[in-house]
Image 1 (cartoon, rainbow, N blue to C red):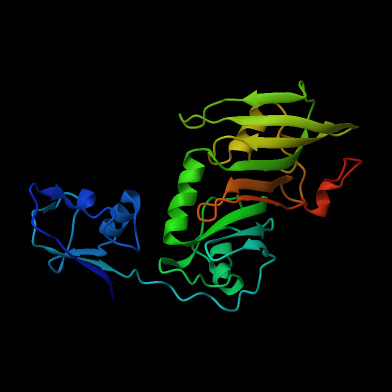
Image 2: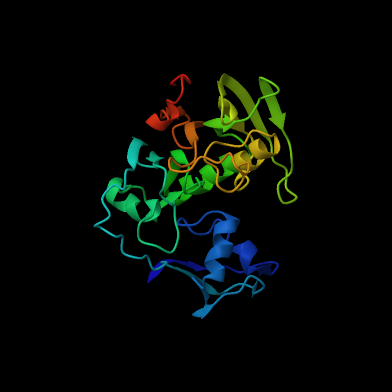
Length: 290
């Protein structure tokens, strides 16, 4: 289905398609977004699928097609998802542990969102609400969702520029050597920075110590907090992948929770600060509640 059409005027100098199309359509404004559209063959030049290396000389007709959207699955229910904040541009939801954000299965947060959120009335409404970042399957916490194409682009830039303050809480096992620590171990060759603050520690016969820690990641690498805490010698309680052999708790999942998000709203310029307390399982063995 045709979404937008553009007639190329006379040009003084020919340009690559991937450069020329940036900013000419309302539905997709970023270069990254247009490259994806070209790759998916959603951009036609004179009726034929365009290529990034295609040169635009002037006089062509460029069409942006509407991407086919899968029909939302209406019988999923909430899956334990809670809407914490919503406006016409974005939403923040709580993802419970044991739920994947997206993937090749029916029971995902992504598939449930259209049934939980109010459709945006903006002209550049996204085909479906789009999670801006990810939380692992066993991790609970707050998740940011974009509802319009321009907001999705802006929120991605906030994350890229480290302008979103994220706070996590975790219960770790082992002795914490310092009350505060900044871990800068690279992950797969990429910079990764995590700030760790000890909130409370209690002795444990099985684990030496159980520690409630506040975590402030400055980057967002896959499994970053889990890897950094394991390398620090205090893996997260219940971490089947990075925990210490013989000291992995089984049965109650991973004790890692995305507690809060704070950022400047890309449309209203207001500060958005949303918090969600950890699940009740964090209230163990005398550790304080938040």
